[in-house]
Length: 448
Image (tube, rainbow, N blue to C red; front, side, top):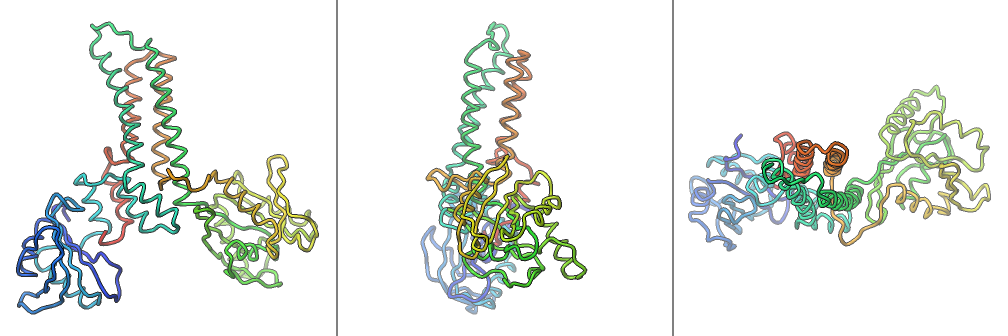
C-alpha cells in the first residue's frame, strides 16, 4: 500500500440507513467522477447525480460533492457520494469504485493523509477520534477545543520558547570571537524559569485532559456479602449487578462506567475474597486478583455490622503500593453516621449503599484522589503519550539547568535544550516516527 494510492471507504456506520456516504481521496478522483457520473462536478457545490456501473446502468442516485486539492480535508482531490444506506447498494458502489483503481482505505487513513499533507497536526488528528468517542458533553467540548488547535497552540508556544533559547546558546557557542559570556547571562536562568512555569501549567491542564478522556480504573474488593454489588448499583444509579443475601453471588467481574462531573470512572465489581472449594468461585477469585493488579484505585468494602477484625485481614491479599480506600458499608445496620476519616494517611468512609448515606463523600473523595478539578472552559482532551512527552521534556529542561548552573557546560546545555524540543515535537507530530503514526491512526474508524 502506498500513500499515493487513491483510497475509498464508507464514511457512515455500516448497516441499513436512510443515507450513506462514500468518501474517495486521491489523484484518481477526477477520472472516477467522469466514469461514475459522466462529468466532473463543480468544486464545493452539492449536485444531484446518478451513480452508474460500467455498462451505464444506474446503481443509485444522490448528492455528489467534489473538493479539489489542496482545499480538502486530506489535502488531495476528494469526492463524496451521498446515496441510499442499503448494504447491497453500498457494496455495489464500492466494487465499482475499486474497479476504477481505488483501494479500500485503512482505519484512519483519511485523517492520516490530512496530517501528512499538513492540514492538521497530530493532536488535532487524535482529537477527531476523541470527538467521535466522546462519552459526555464535557468530553465532546474539550475534544473540539483540541481539534480547533488550542492544545497545539500551547505546545507550539512552548516549543518556540525552547527554540529561541537554543538559538541564543548555539550562536554564542558558534561565534566565540564575539566574546559573549552567555553562561553568566542572568537572562538564561530567567528564560529557563519562564519555560518551566509554562511547562508546569501545560502539564496540569494535560493531566486533567487525560483524566477527562481515560478516567480511573476502580476495583471493588472485599469479603463475600460485604455489599460490593449494592455499592456498584448505587454508584451506577441502576441495577447492574445481581444482589442477594446469599454470599458469593458475584462470581465474575461486572464492569460499569459512570461519570463524575465529566470524568469517567471504570468500576469493576469482583468476586468476594475468601477460601472456597467451589471451582467456579475459585475462578472468580482468580479474576479478582487479576483485576486488582490493573487497578488505579481499590475500594475495600467492609461490612460495618460485622466485627472489623474478621475482615481487615483482607488488606494482606491486596497489591502493595496501590491507592486504596476503606469503605465501611451497612451503617444503616450498625447505626453509625456517614463520615470520612483520615487515620495515619489511610482514608476511611462510613456509608450505606442501601440508603445512599455517604455516597457524596465517596464521589468527592474519588475526584480528589484522581486530582480532577472539574470541567473548566480551557480544558482540552489529552492522552497519556502527551503527558509522557511533557514529563520527558521537563527532565531535559531540568538537566539543562544543571548543566548551566553547576557545570557551566554550554554544549551540554544546548544538547539538553535540543532534546527537550525534539520530545515536545512528538506531541504535535513535528517530530515523529512511522511506528507512532501506525499506533495512533490504527485506532480510528474506517472512513475517517
